[in-house]
Length: 118
Image (cartoon, rainbow, N blue to C red; front, side, top):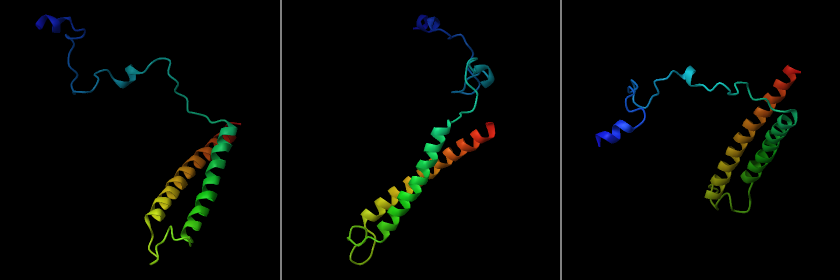
């Protein structure tokens, strides 16, 4: 068994001071050829993301208004209390609205960055 341990590469190396951490400083671990520039969105992609964000606002706000005024009995029971259908669809709408807002903001930032560079 001792013979096997001796043949393992690096067995004679010193253990790093903190278990699970590399002893080589972060600056020395960086590869030479890595891309360090900021990501840039093209004009069409930026416009698409912004349009998607606006579309999300229009669609999901309209959906929530229609859900609130639902008269079919799906969203509210006979006593006027919200049903599981209401809560599931409201959650879906809120999450989609937030994601659309974030995506639209990315598109807007992309367009602003393009305007500054041109």
